[in-house]
Length: 190
Image (cartoon, rainbow, N blue to C red; front, side, top):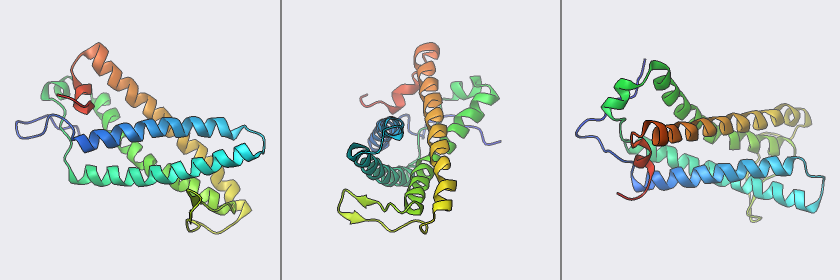
C-alpha cells in the first residue's frame, strides 16, 4: 500500500505559489463550469443556449490546458508531505481516500473535457476556440457515437463534482474540527 509519506526536515511545508494559484483557479473554474453545465443543459433551443454551449466548450478547453499545466507542475515540483503526526493518526481508510481522491481528480481533470470534446466532435459541432480557432475533431462525426459518448461526459462531470465536494469537506474538517493547520499549506501568506 502506498501511504502518504510523513514530512521530513528537508521536505517543503507548503505548496509553491504556482501550485496554489493553479489549485485555486482550477477549483473555482470547475465550480463555475459545472454550474454552467447544469444551467444550460435544460435550456430550450435558443441563441442564448448556443452561446452558453460555446462558452462551455471554450472554458472546457481552457480547463484542459490548465489541468495539463497543473499536472506538469505537480510532476516537476514535489508537494509538501503530510505532517508525520497526522499520517500516524490517520486511519488506513483516510490514507486511501486521500490518495484516491487526488489521483481520481487528476484523471478527471483531463478526462471530463476530453470526453466533452469527443462528444462535440461526434455530434458534428466543432469547437471554435474563442470564435477564432477551430480545433481538430477528436473523433469522426457519428450520431450513434455521439449518443454513446454524451452520458459519459455527464457521468464523469458529476463524479468530479462529488470528488471536489469530498475534497472540500475533508479540507474543512482538517481546518475546523481537527485544527491541524493542514489547509494553511494551500493558502497564500505566511
